[in-house]
Length: 114
Image (cartoon, rainbow, N blue to C red):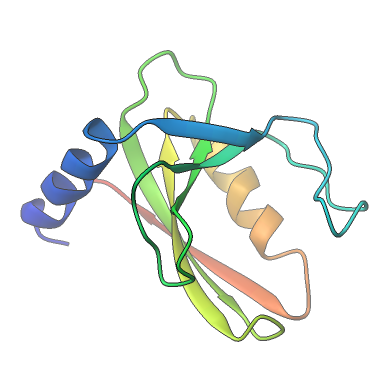
């Protein structure tokens, strides 16, 4: 990917407040079997394809640097989205991708920042 792609994403992250509405260990509001392995939320004042804020996973690293994105496809919801990964270790990135691939109706692909 081009450097301008990451630069523009950095600009969005820096200009918006991260709202964590599903803390690590919390359950999905509609699907109680789904437990969030890390903090999950959105960037306030932004808009993703579903009309809500841009989704964000927040890892354990103190530096909240944008490390990667996860592209997801969900045939039940009939949508495709990206989720930003901030401050994530290599293991956390892998776990997040596995989280989104743990279903017959959803798949994900990790795109790491080089």
